[in-house]
Length: 442
Image (cartoon, one colour):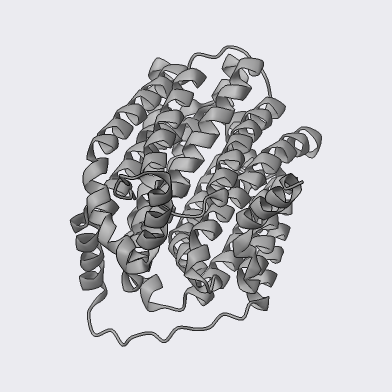
């Protein structure tokens, strides 16, 4: 008799951040827009590979789209801390809609070339450099109850990966039926949903302190803060290594789909959708958690899982073997990223939030272009599968190093959890389960 009630309670727990009106609007608009974003990601990769047949140019495409984030993220973080984060996010969404519209116009008129795609990818990279820290920092203002922040971050990941599940599958069908241009067009239209959701929000603007310091001084202050605080430093370093060595597998997926699995755009869509399903499952698991305690162990386990998934992907030779491997890979990748995000958002000082989240963008998204370029170069020499294998092994080693440092990171984070009121609640639960409770972990 209690099972339905417990199931209902569990569902409410997973979606508790949706109680907040502003976050509910954001979630709805972004859910639509992100499907369009995945249409463009898949269509762009497929277009470049169709035009050139070059794995190296796939790496160059990933580099062009993400290197601006690596270069500009520290400056963007300082400016996001100074500016109105809400207005920054509105502007970045409008500019992203224009970028997708230009891609659509060029593709549908039949004049699109490789250099057009590369230039517009660089433009999108500039947009993302400001969009990422603004988006991550604004979530705190959308969710009035700070206790719901971890759930909101996990729901963000669920939203991203639900779109990642639906978008690539839709992209494969659209590309096969009408070509890449219509993917870009649908993406441009999808931005209207998130822009409308932002305009309907009632955001309480936080007064900005008058800053007498220079931008470069604040940038250096953000670096010193992140590098001097061991938990933030360790999380960012692991993210950077995983992004550099593991994440570039995504730019090689067209090669795997065509050359290894002997498929087409539909095969690429199926592989990406399977990875998205795994990521969605992982995100829902995080959303069901009620506390940040224990996420240090989740970060380690998920990084290991991601590495093992990459090793498996490097050995597959059929679509039916590749799909479950992609499921594991997607789950590990998302869990590691979202858990790291949650820990950072929980322990960071509010006045440095934009700068730390820009470093998060730099570590996770900014290192990816270097990895994409490296992966493209290696794949042209040693093959896509061996390149993915090397990335998987490097990810496993990085996770092992983080595991070794984890006990000390728990000790450092403990006072923050005490101050935030997280520790008493957890301590009660631990005392009920054991006579000798262990210190909580980040």
